[in-house]
Figure 1 (cartoon, rainbow, N blue to C red):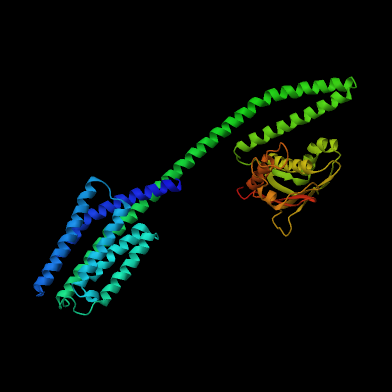
Figure 2: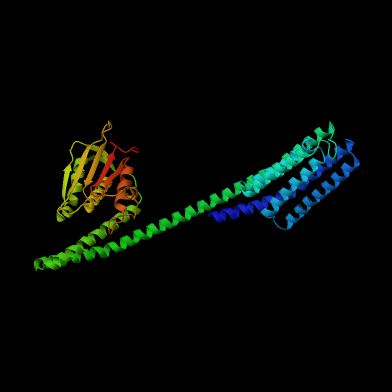
Length: 431
């Protein structure tokens, strides 16, 4: 849900709750005013005071009833709710001034419209206006001389009016604040439902896109194999006829075809979920040497020397196929990053300070290296600094190693090279 949608939902909820609050308010205020008037009559209040209060109570109640009836036809606006609460504060202040100012027994009522304003409008300017108005009204009451314009309500009638005013204030706060709280909770629930719906739609779209991509990769694979076979035949013919220029061009075509094959293989592997590991005892020294042997044709073609320091004594429990794929991807990245005639090193050793038989594999190249920003994004699918690269190889390697409970860390320096460090436990934690 966007911010504009959230604001629209919040406004709609506020209008609905405000309308309900104004509809209920006369039901609370009418008996409260009746109680006040009866207690004032019983206290022997002067006729002039009773008359002024009767007019004031009647006008205020009439306005409240009008709002309630208007709300039946259409929801009130935020502006209307704010003006109504502000006017209510002024009206209650008038009643306090006629019944003892700051010593008035109806003073607790003064806080009800202000607190409802705070709850409805939060930290906006309307709440600031309501606070300023309350301070101003209290200050005005404090300036009134004691006993002006009428004497204070005598005991015990003032105590009874205070109880009545407090109860009415609590009822008004309950009607306003709890309803607003429910409205915000409803808005939050709508936001959560919208979020869940968007996530579900995104997941469906992603699965559809992955399925389409996998099918596309599968359909491309067969004609690509045919093209590769024909190219190899043409290359043999060019070599037999001593046509060096054609042979060289066909060799470039074969390399590009192999690169496309690798990209397709990486994509299919990336979109295929990782299943259960087929665990077995894996001798890491042999695994490293096998990976180097598979990459040796590409390395020899470019004059790259791959040095292997892999003792045969280190053995772990792992899925040999997935681990081999991860090492091959890391080694290919190192070869691709290296200049022709450079050296790539593969080092295998027991993990430093580890008692569980874990191992560490380091692959170092002396290529162009990466800066800090590139390092932070390395392994992100479809992000690559190499022309034609997909970024899937490193992502697959990291996922396979994590599945084994291992980790992959990269350190690099521009112009110096990159160091990929793989740490593996003696056995995956899930086993």
